[in-house]
Amino acid sequence: MKNIVILGAGTAGTMMANHLVSKLPQNEWSISIVDQYKTHYYQPGFLFLPFDTYTEAQVKKEGKKFIPKGVKYIQKKIERIYPDSNKVELEDDVLKYDILIVATGSKIAPDEIEGMHSQEWHKSIFDFYTYEGALALRNKLREWDGGKLVVHITEMPIKCPVAPLEFAFLADSYFKKKGMRDKVDITYVTPLGGAFTKPKATETLHYLLEEKGIKEVTDFNIEQVDYKNNKIVDYADVEVDYDLLVTVPTNMGDDVIERSGLGDDLNFIPTHKNTLQSKAHENIFVIGDATNLPASKAGSVAHFQAETLTDNILLFIDEKPLKEEFDGHANCFIETGDNKALLIDFNYEQEPVEGTFPIAGIGPLKLLKESVFNHWGKLAFRWIYWNMLLKGIPIPFVGRNMSTKGKKIN
Image (cartoon, rainbow, N blue to C red; front, side, top):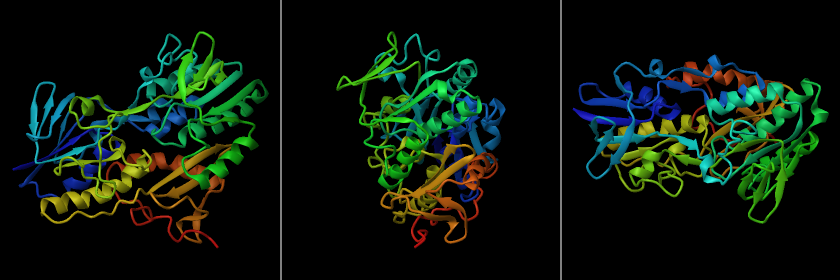
């Protein structure tokens, strides 16, 4: 019996378990998935928790229920990977593998910036990239009476690069509905030269920031949070004052990657950008936020990666050449407030374009334009996530071959 071990039962790991269990003969292959946590979170929902759009129950479920029959679920801490001996050390056990799939994700690291993880953490300084942070921020916003709100990104890469922009847009809408927008000054602070990583989308998003009266500070490389004086300071001594700081801390790969000596400076694993095979070890594959790929760290990307990786695992088993197929494909809904959203679709090479998705000329979703349909699509994705995406069920018209090519309307 040969062994496939999947590390991490988040979005990417759970999808891979569901994809592989039906494609490998159970009398030849054993599949195990390891994760120390019981709860599976719908992380895109963290954006909506602070604004009372979603409840706690809507963004978390028991992870075990999404692991298919035929896959061994091991709830233990992963201590270290030993790639030269093909084994994984757990807190009180050792697993041997023939193929290893690393899906350990990424996490925030507020300790990386001086003063961020201070006595003001979850008091006047908040994140919304964790369940605990989003809930604490929700409780704060319920009672906050206004002032200077700063939405800040520490550095790239981060999970879902559009989420901080969405937060700023939703905050604008939230305070308007509460009748206190005139009491809130919103500033968006980014280390990038513009609002987003892609120039075409940056142009559209910058216009929306201006339209909503949200100030924009670019090229801000933070040195410290001066929590005693309520300001963030960058290396050029530029200062931005705040009363309420909503920050996206440094995102890093799991600590087990550092302990195992498999990652870069941020604990992301060097990965072939088209095959998803580790660059250092041919029987190790990496998916989702654990990779160092120049693709967005988002659930939609993991969905497209999983399709390619499933094929490549089967090819690897048969000792055939791997498909260099994954092209960085990502599509993201961008909530813009007032029950509207944008949709962008792009890959490594292709900039976001205007047009319709998923069917060119028909839609029904519009690319790079605000619409109510896009907003509904964003909200509908939660149902799709729990009922289709995690279970490896194909999503109609949305797959690895549905790229931006040909969608532009002339």
